[in-house]
Image 1 (cartoon, protein in one colour):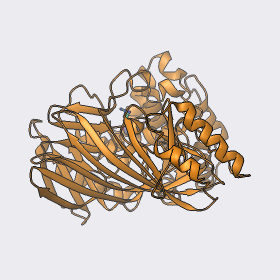
Image 2: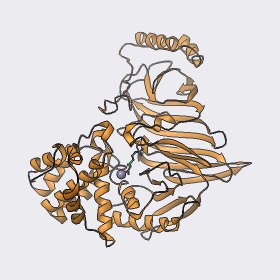
Image 3: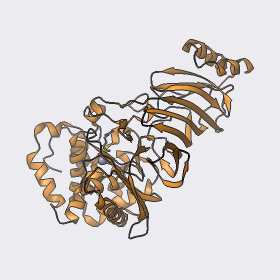
Amino acid sequence: TAALGMVAATTFAAAPSAASSAASSSVSTAPGFRPGAPGVGDPYFPLEGNGGYDAQHYTLDLAYDPATKVLKGTVHMLARATQDLSRFDLDFQQLTVRSVTVNGRPAAYTRDGQELVVTPRSGLRMNSLFDVGVTYGGIPQPLGGPIVFGLPYGWIATDDGVLVACEPNAASTWFPSNDHPSDKATYSIVVTVPKGLVAAANGVLAAQVTRGDTTTFWWNELRPMASYLVTTTIGKFDVQVGKTPAGLREWVATDPTVPGTEVVFQQTAAITDYWSELFGRYPFEETGAIVDNVPVVGFSLENQTKPLYSAVRSETTVAHELSHQWFGDSVSVRTWQHIWLNEGFATFAQRYWTEHIGGESVQAWFDRQYATRPDAFWTIKVADPQRDTMFDTAVYNRGGMTLQALRVKIGDEPFFRLLRTWAADHRYGLADTDQFITLAEKISGQDLTDFFNVWLYTPSKPVTW
Ligand code: ARG
Ligand code: ZN
């Protein structure tokens, strides 16, 4: 292992084959120790996440300078080995790795596409806790492509900072992680930016310290969080801190160049409190919002505790993103095919809010969808929409219609008890469509096999249900 360590310390500029052979010699010297898988087996994203360990806590220590667009950082991941590990992967792409350590000692590493392959000096025993440190730097680029309709997503540089919205797979463009919702972890996020800028991240702001011409923001998210929900959105922001009427902490940052944002604090407060009544206790320590002026970004994202709104924002969007704190952020998809458990639920909630404030009823919305959606809309299988159509309108709207149809079928009281039980049973955890169907049947006392087959798995317009 001593020889391996020397390889490790100098592998940075070496050819990939050098470290790969180091890795295989480690396997041969430690019987039973084998590499972790390069993915968790999500059919839509075979390389997202990794096998062999379970991430517990990340510490992100980052510095960003909008003038150069360079991000520099050191990330530590505390993880537990779930097998005897000879080596393991992190998901990390684009940026330049300077060094990797495991339990404080230099480790060998190679890059292979979006995989950062790490070989520790000696094998990691099943169930042992280990710390991985990665020091890196570079200029992160957003992702694009069909998943989010060709729009850029991920790390999106702005004039005065950056907007960070990573669903489903862009976390790996700016920090190394086990980048799949099935491995949630807690986070400390420490971000240093030029003085005068704000760095907004998830959880609670523990400290804000200005030294010389930089300010460091120290955030803690101590509830489990999926990597795609991590943000460090930076820019000139007005910050408003306070509490909702029900007494929950609230932190809101608004870009002063976006008109009409003075209502965001009150909207966020009222909607968070209302959802807490309807869906059960708010799952996190603080609610909030970030409103940034980035017209190129045509979406909002339910980043945990800090939903991110691009300039395009409405009260019902706030209702949508805040409902995701229960459905998506606290209860997370086991694999991405179950995305309707996020988007269908948030769409239902959004329409419920519209009705609540005196607009169109959910049923009238349902009827309108049913009457006007063209054939193409009905061809998506909501509970298995396929990767490039995972954010198709049908996942949102037919998903939401599924819940409204279910509500009518089983009645309001059981329906809302179902939503509350769902949020409580899987709080901070993972869930899938079968589990929802099972719970719906249990709570309603009805056989709902045909109902869910028609609504979730049949690629045509439901006729009877
Ligand atoms: N989950 C978002 C919503 O609330 C959609 C995000 C799509 N992904 C992305 N990177 N824009 O509707
Ligand atoms: Zn959504």
